[in-house]
Length: 150
Image (cartoon, rainbow, N blue to C red; front, side, top):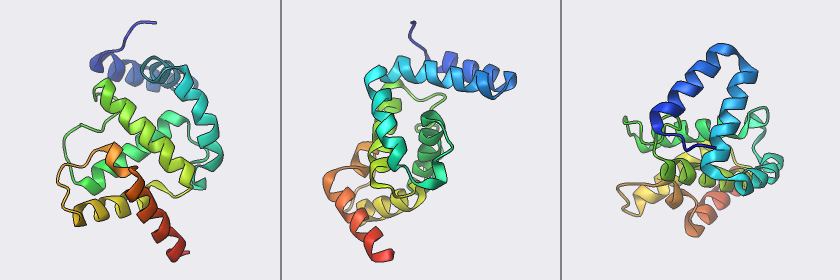
C-alpha cells in the first residue's frame, strides 16, 4: 500500500464521503491501516469494548476524529494540527494512541480532555500534546476526578 500524504488523505476522505457511508468507512480503514499498522488496529477491538457508550456506534477513525475535536476545543487551538484529514502521520499516530488509552478508561472524551487540559494548565504546561493527556499522572488525576463525580 502506498503512503498517504496529507492532501491525498483529505481528498480521498472527501470523495469517499460523497460516495456514501460504506465508501467512507473503507477509506477510513485504509488510511488508518496505512498510518497505524495492523497491530494498532487490532488493539482497537479491546478499546471498543471499553469506549464510552456515547461513541459506541463510531468507527475507530470517527472516534479518533471526535477525540481530536475535543483536543482542539479544550486546548483552544484554531490551526489544523489535530485534524486527522491533514495532520502529519506522527500527529495522527499520537492522537490515535491517546484516544485508545482514553477509551480504556471508559470516560467520555469531552470530560477526559477537559479535565486533563485543566490539570496540565494548572501544572504550567503551555503547548499540550496528545501524549501528555495520557501520561500516568494525568490519567490518574482524571480517573480520580471521574470516581468523585459519579
